[in-house]
Image 1: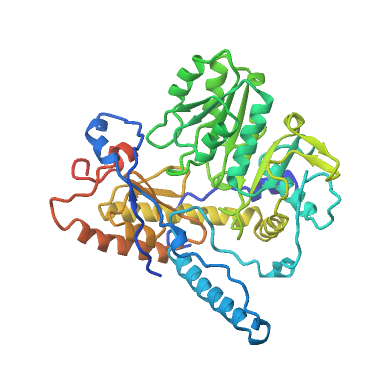
Image 2: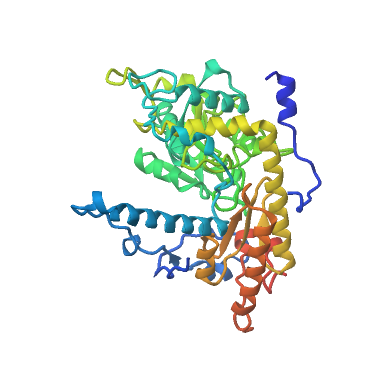
Length: 480
């Protein structure tokens, strides 16, 4: 594809939004836990007690697990075991259909059809080792994997001869790899990450025994570069390894990459003294198609980018893509004779089916297909936010996001029914390509109906979430 056609394919969003264009379980036990909150603004002290909300954990699956039992001696003739397993799978499929119907809180695109790939499910496809160097195991899909990596390399503007990457087993693995490369480039570097970074970033710091500095956030969830500057100045003698969020987990906030780079340079950190990993789990694939969105590109001094393949792309198994600069990977890789390949990945064996699924959907949708899906998600997210506010419900939507943040529903059964992700007094809906207006209307109508019973007693009021979303987005009695 030439540069002109790429520019057309990567065309930006239309500005007009048209929203129309586009089994009961027991409640989990309540486990009390201390909640660490950054208190922001003049309302912080008044609201602190409301933030200390008990953490609700899911139920113990041992109570409902499906036991593995030995076949009876005559099962081969009676077929009873096969019939039992078939019935279990049929009931499970019915549960999946129901759970998919009421899924809103997690960033998974459930709208896909990979029927054409069922012919490959009989093969044990394993891409163990380096994607660019074949191993002696011949049942692999490297030719698909490298094709997918080249597609993402074009998206993030790095030449084939300058990048290295691989298809991971999940978004967390991409973060673990990105931070590891940064640590290998700067063994004495300090990891900086905003407090709203994905938990896998802090897991990486623990795993690699790295010094980690948490940076405060703005109300939006974006990294606070004033606080970042203050903490950089305290550690000017050590290199900086920075995690930049291309969409935070809870609020969908996008860190200002250009401001992060500017802050580093103004604090005296030249490009040979910092490494930036961009965690683009969900929005890393959406932002190239958002009008006026800042670009994530290797033309800027970043070290790596990772995205999830099972989120916006829509893949039936968890997977992800990690891209870094080839010059960095030499510090990490080792040749392995047993594989006749090179070891530079976190995992050894790697799912060889995932690259085929990604290759298939990238070919079917292309740049224009993803552009349309991004437009749909943003339109529907604005629709949801506006409907919530019209109903008197506190809600916030960041400019570059399809994650709508609102007050946490009072009833945990409602939370479980719609599979909402919650933190403190807030919850969110992540509007994905599989979320349409009808589903949002069903959710909104049920939420409004439930709230009329939760808050029918005037003594019980919806929570104030100004500390989480800002006073302008809070519809509580004090701020409406």
